[in-house]
Length: 67
Image (cartoon, rainbow, N blue to C red; front, side, top):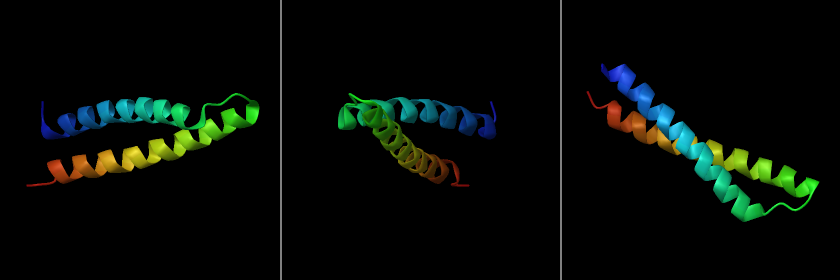
């Protein structure tokens, strides 16, 4: 397995983990009980997911960019 496949695999795993964890956190923050609550949940989930992706990608880039 070369380095590019390793980076791809790590990013793939982190993407799945970030999406699931941010969805769970967004659910606990909003606790939707109506249609507007569900829209708020989706908005918060999207924001948290994007922040988590930026953080994870930055960490992976910093680790794998040391040549």
